[in-house]
Length: 436
Image (cartoon, rainbow, N blue to C red; front, side, top):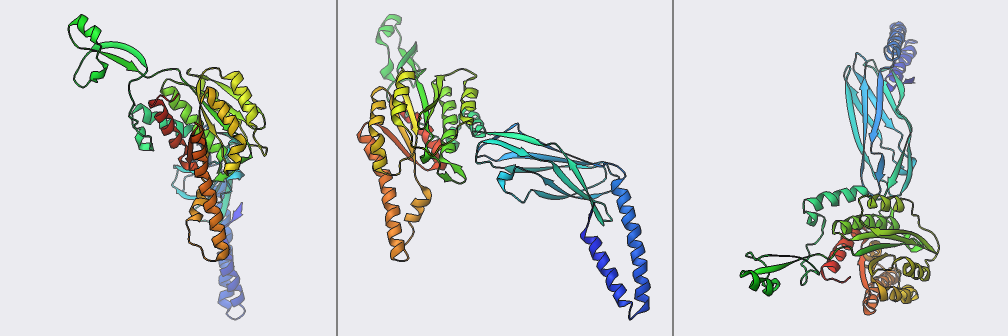
């Protein structure tokens, strides 16, 4: 039981009346009368709130949360009291969120229930623990609050961004991926796999006319081609220290994991096979490229457990194990981060070795905060030198792109928040150009 502000204000008035009673006798007797009335109302308030359980609350949310997305939580609060209530509802969310605003005030009429909806955005994968739901109820008298402890402790696993995956899936079904920034790529030349011969209809490309079939059937016939199928697309994720840098609360590793998950779905939607490789100081995990119905769950489970390390990534080990496990020519999308040309030069020989047998796309990140700072005006000499350093780092990122292209390696420099759309667009461009 908790005493409310109304109780303390009432007691303050009574005390002041008692003090005034030293000068005015009627104030003294009035204070006694108010004290007796306050005692009766307090007893009545206690009886009203404690004569039965009265309040029930429960939490409803997904069995797992999506990393980097807003996840909906619903609190259902119901009253079985025969009088109106004022409530304060506090949900004990995981401490990692460090939020103090999950405290909701509402009013319930007799025998009424209401639903509270709020959202949480996790920025790290793992297990998040919810506690109880605390409900503080007061009657119309309002002298005390009764605390109700409702709900159960609940552990929620935070997975890579499957909500983003669902969004892409729905838009892909409705052919509206352009709403998310996915470009419609014009295909260069004919597709590579012959499918069938059909009658010519207005609008068909005259270059696909099959003259032998036309002569045999005595009417125009055209060849129909389809996308080359069963190509392998493998997301290669660097888990070294360079991927621990954070933007908007999420590490580069988590951005790469979310992008890999969505790209794997898009590749399988395009009838390619999708796989995942993770590495750091050693070759860490390998999900073989497949296109089965259960394969997305296998990729999701693998990505859920990945964590970055403080070590330097070993690209020589990556080359050895890619040669061992990936025998078919594939598109390798390597998510990493280079801070300068010297950092690239240390790994360039290994990237060139991979590009001898596969098509390699290196994806690394633009430091948006540093870029924005470099565009601000300098205020003094020290600030001028800091801006010069920031501009040099920005220039080196562009130099890395040029250096990779000179060595026949595809490159994508992107902002972390644009990673998923940028990677999908580049994959579609390369597929349309038959680059792999």
